[in-house]
Amino acid sequence: MKERRQFIRIVYQAPATLQQAGATWHTTLKDISLHGVLLSRPEDWPQREDNTFDVDIVLPQTDVHLTMAAELIEQDETTLRMKIAHIDIDSLSHLRRLIELNLGDDALLHRELAHLTDLAADE
Image (cartoon, rainbow, N blue to C red; front, side):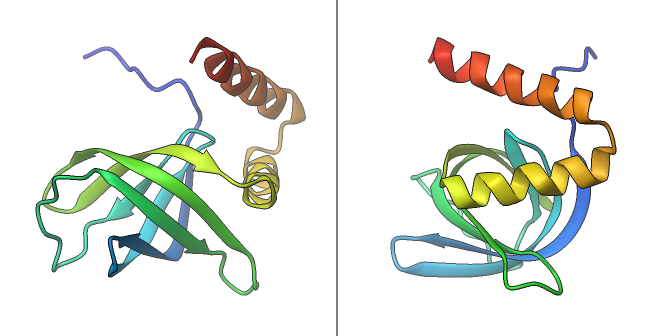
């Protein structure tokens, strides 16, 4: 199978909360990119008609929250794969810094950001 992934994913464990229409689920972030997140599937996860959720990720040992609107793309018995639909500027800045620290390569980060900008321009 051909790899379709266009963004580098950072393996990162952190507590996360999903919200939709007054319902809340607690979960764990497994990995993250500039384009999406992979979360553990909560035990009480229901089948939902609406695939748009608010996601709040707390970076461990900090008071930093990454908040975003995300669309559920795929799920299985253990994971939820979500595409970031909207992220506020503060969260994006923290996410950028998190990826920068984990990549250790500024050129690679700038390539990722340019690709993200190109995708946004195409939409």
